[in-house]
Image 1 (cartoon, protein in one colour):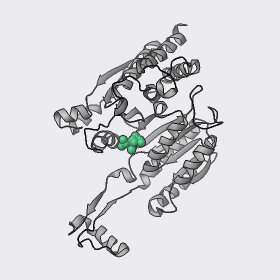
Image 2 (cartoon, helix red, strand yellow):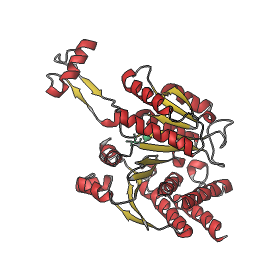
Image 3 (cartoon, rainbow, N blue to C red):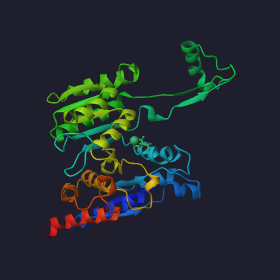
Image 4 (cartoon, helix red, strand yellow):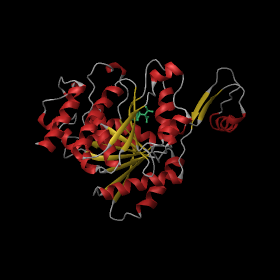
Length: 377
Ligand code: IPM
Ligand code: MN
């Protein structure tokens, strides 16, 4: 039975890198005897500017009939910042309850790494980022002057803690709430332990800032310790988020599986991307293990490079590899990864970010060529 993929190329370099991803996925599926069908959707900045729509309930219902979503990037300088991010990317993650954001940090041989004396054997771990809670829930507000009722609680708190009287001319506050549920923490932490078990990893590191945000990450720690009891063979540790940014640079080889709340996960995976050769090398999967998952390169739309054919499509191609794996197509998924490795090992086709001059489409072609070599000799 064919796997039906909904494709949202999106903005900026999104369409260019997704085109290469589809090229590779099509070749891999044909060679490995997997059936994939692709249907494209126009959501993104252009569509929004033309129609005034981001993603409507009926669009989401339509997408829910697919087996996976393959997303390029969202974000455009012509649209106020946050609008597309919230109206598209976060809407998709939340609507489909994609509670795991899986971001492998893996340095492939042949890829330049900015860390002196570190190589592929040192940089190979998973970041499991919680993807639906924390500071991303979108609860918050701004207040000044006379308060609306819903802000009453905050007004009281501010008055008590800071001695601020917002009815005073010129005073204003903004606040945003980080929210975590026991169930939300539990499911993603359990996923991290299961991943460790499945992949033969021996250690899970939990990230937080429980020394300051005691309520929010106090719960996180508590749940982590409870879940860990079910995985006695796996070593555990806690790391404060500030400390892990330091240790990821100094001793990346220490990490195997890192599980993190949403916001800190956002930050440390950009750092992780640099360790693996840059944003052009970093794929991610927004997973709902019981539902519809979405795969994307973790880089943004990079408007500066859009339309120039210089973006590295490997992050998108590797996101496609993750999609195949999640769809249960291990053989095809492995073939894509091996083809990517082959191209990098050879070092003849490299995009600008990797120190070469190859175009986006040449990189896609090179991966397809390696795939064909594997199957056709
Ligand atoms: C990412 C991005 C998004 C995030 C933005 C675009 C909303 O930075 O996928 O890491 O913060 O999650
Ligand atoms: Mn990010």
